[in-house]
Image (cartoon, rainbow, N blue to C red; front, side):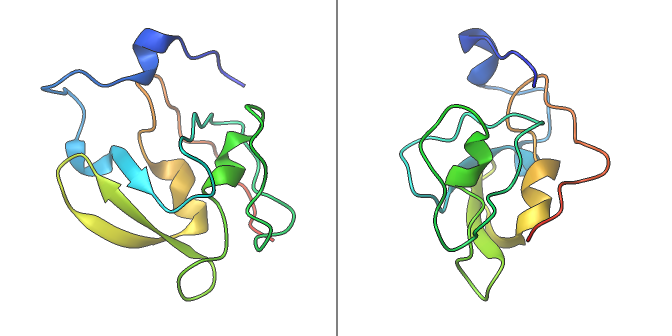
Length: 106
């Protein structure tokens, strides 16, 4: 798991990265995400996960729309329904590195 500082966690405008790949809001069961590359999906997609700082992606990775999808709004203003594995491909913070392989969704 990578260590994210408070300065790394917030984007400053204008951003140098592609704003169409920076999530701002997403379906979830908690007020924030604080996701990390090493976060694993929950074992039960219907439980909504927990509120722990460890494996924080479980706050977002849940069965919502059409099964294994959630809605995400990006910094450029567009919104889309995404497949759960694709959550790991977005630029959640400055130092995010997309895991390879992507986590397997139950």
